[in-house]
Image (tube, rainbow, N blue to C red):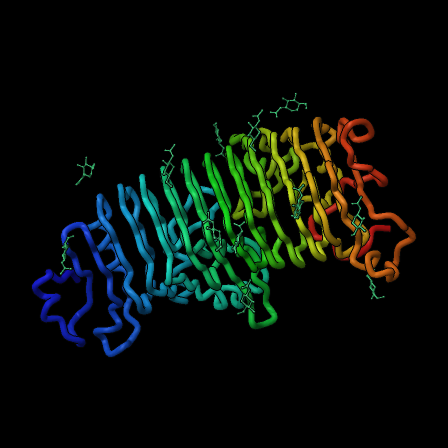
Length: 440
Ligand SMILES: *[C@@H]1O[C@H](CO)[C@@H](O)[C@H](O)[C@H]1NC(C)=O
Ligand SMILES: *[C@@H]1O[C@H](CO)[C@@H](O)[C@H](O)[C@H]1NC(C)=O
Ligand SMILES: *[C@@H]1O[C@H](CO)[C@@H](O)[C@H](O)[C@H]1NC(C)=O
Ligand SMILES: *[C@@H]1O[C@H](CO)[C@@H](O)[C@H](O)[C@H]1NC(C)=O
Ligand SMILES: *[C@@H]1O[C@H](CO)[C@@H](O)[C@H](O)[C@H]1NC(C)=O
Ligand SMILES: *[C@@H]1O[C@H](CO)[C@@H](O)[C@H](O)[C@H]1NC(C)=O
Ligand SMILES: *[C@@H]1O[C@H](CO)[C@@H](O)[C@H](O)[C@H]1NC(C)=O
Ligand SMILES: *[C@@H]1O[C@H](CO)[C@@H](O)[C@H](O)[C@H]1NC(C)=O
Ligand SMILES: *[C@@H]1O[C@H](CO)[C@@H](O)[C@H](O)[C@H]1NC(C)=O
Ligand SMILES: *[C@@H]1O[C@H](CO)[C@@H](O)[C@H](O)[C@H]1NC(C)=O
Ligand SMILES: *[C@@H]1O[C@H](CO)[C@@H](O)[C@H](O)[C@H]1NC(C)=O
Ligand SMILES: *[C@@H]1O[C@H](CO)[C@@H](O)[C@H](O)[C@H]1NC(C)=O
């Protein structure tokens, strides 16, 4: 409910709550403050604030706790500044979200908040988003890509968008998603998804980019159970720098090539100054196989898509206890069906891994398997120095006869000439993204 300034002057606790609107400035106060602190859905007031002040205005979430119990749709903003001083806490009515989250067009993924516009700043200084994700982690029981499980916030159809100083705790699914956007900067971002029970935080990506260009992501800290940052199809000119990731899957391109009739193009991507601690993967590219397998559902089936991934650089990575720091795989969800791994229609080329230091969990640093159908040209390693944790401590490696750190390759066009990889092992075509033991 909106209050005029006059009403604000006589506002007393106990009154229905509200947006205080002064010209193009809208200040939001939590509804609960006027309902004896009982949780009340703040979404209607939030929607109202964006309607009043979303063009040439400012929307401020003042301090306090805002309950987000229903979907938020704040799109077509123009010249708008959004300040988050309060804490936004999402409701845990799982059946509600499963049937009401807003579709985002990729796979059958959906979001709790669709946000977008032109010349927009979202500043989270002082406040935070809390997705209450534990409910989601527990009910989902480690299953991947549950349809309807919502991305906390999706930036869509945006141009000249700056998102900064934002802390996202316990995201329900991916913390953020950037889609159909151009010139987006996200800086000083913290994402932290941890679970307190036996179920993990699968699919809590820091962010994914899709059908977007000119993206800068810097100063991030992410602790989660999936990709730290992932560039999906049609990402162009992505620059990622100064990111620290704990656990999770590191820096990813993909997966791409999921859709038979929709090519994926990814080019001009730079990941630099990245620290990875206890991650399962590090700096890798994953495409689907060349044939369609099963029904295309929320990420779990598909393939057959064409396109390319080219001109990608991963540089200045410091990795600690990472299971598989460097990888190319072209059959990401069918690695057990080895026959499909050499069929991908995606062309990968011009990929450089430069200045990698640190330790691997097992005896393997890199697995590069390009599809036989599309061998990869212009793949380069410069200054990649990775050693297994045990080797650095003079401890034995369990259950392997291999003495050197494994750099395995297949179908890399320049692998024995200019690549600099130092390939010392054949990369089997069914090598997955989850390494759990030493290579034999
Ligand atoms: C309303 O905004 C104007 C200018 O933006 C400011 O001068 C004035 O103090 C504001 N009024 C209140 C009550 O905040
Ligand atoms: C918003 O600002 C722009 C440029 O300053 C102006 O052209 C436009 O008319 C304004 N729109 C509204 C609804 O005030
Ligand atoms: C990109 O967006 C930023 C705001 O984040 C703006 O300052 C800059 O001018 C935009 N760049 C272009 C080329 O429009
Ligand atoms: C994430 O949250 C957990 C639980 O509160 C905490 O132990 C951990 O240090 C946090 N991680 C980061 C990177 O802040
Ligand atoms: C990155 O974080 C540091 C430390 O908080 C800060 O000094 C620096 O300004 C940040 N960079 C950007 C681009 O915000
Ligand atoms: C990198 O980001 C972290 C915060 O995530 C910040 O503390 C640090 O100062 C940043 N470093 C640079 C060089 O900006
Ligand atoms: C990627 O962009 C191309 C146009 O450049 C379009 O045809 C294709 O459908 C897009 N792919 C996806 C998965 O959206
Ligand atoms: C490759 O990508 C980088 C950004 O990482 C860009 O500066 C460069 O111009 C691109 N090269 C080509 C040939 O497009
Ligand atoms: C790919 O690499 C080749 C050989 O190094 C180079 O001639 C070409 O310009 C590169 N293309 C892109 C898009 O980076
Ligand atoms: C190599 O990477 C490390 C770790 O990220 C960094 O400290 C160092 O400055 C980098 N070296 C060069 C030459 O960029
Ligand atoms: C590689 O790193 C190890 C420590 O992990 C170090 O002892 C060794 O000198 C480094 N090699 C090169 C060529 O930098
Ligand atoms: C590293 O050494 C420890 C202690 O001997 C052993 O338990 C562990 O299995 C070894 N790790 C690997 C990957 O072989």
